[in-house]
Length: 178
Image 1: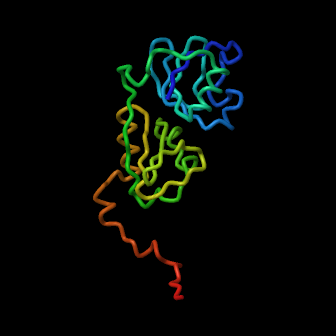
Image 2 (image 1 turned 90 degrees about the vertical axis):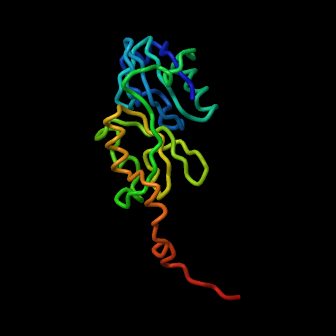
Image 3 (image 1 turned 90 degrees about the horizontal axis):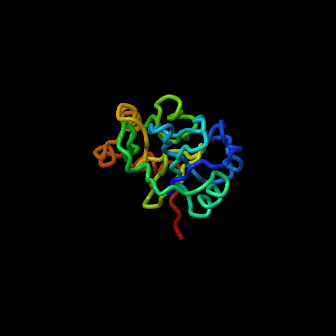
């Protein structure tokens, strides 16, 4: 996770999703400070010179981003008080299983950004095509009400994991004898 100040004049007025090379980079943006106000960063957010962006990704991808965007900021947007916060949400609702983040339209419909997905102890940088699985733990950034709505959509119920029916998981597995 690194914070960057937009210093590249070529990015002034562009959407975050239009940063050159952003589609190839495994980087997600979670927050943006614009004119003193903190916002949820999305691919549709318009950047201007002097804005600060919080990016999540692998160190080498973040370094490439720094070269394009501008300079690293000493300010950590995660520590800025305001309406934007993050929450870890457990995926337990059957309706979202197997759906990818693009299909769920969390940014457009809920105003949140998924910055990480923890799956079986491995932390993943979420892409639009990442399909959700039972037990995934999403790190989601947004305003309180949006986080509540996202939590309900995903289930966020540890009890549901305890009641998980494992029978359907074994359908199609044929025992082999040697």
